[in-house]
Image (cartoon, rainbow, N blue to C red; front, side, top):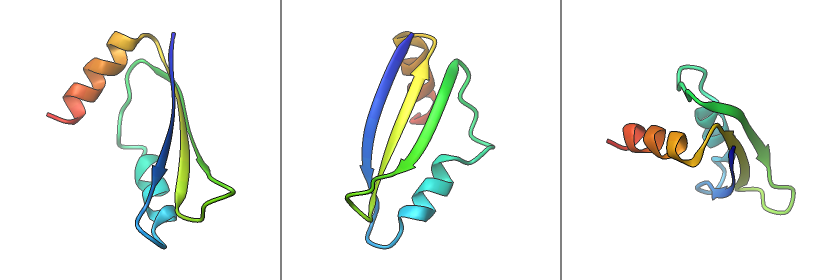
Length: 68
């Protein structure tokens, strides 16, 4: 297993828009067991994203494909 916890900061006032985009059901994440998007309680423009993948290699292959 491979896990990531990432903090993302949206443009002011656009955190909910970013959260909805990240949770788009049309974005497939093969090999991802868990993908959680949460509001940062200390920053109104920030999100915390927790991901659990089968392996680092699977995550890297997905990331390379998405960013190609």
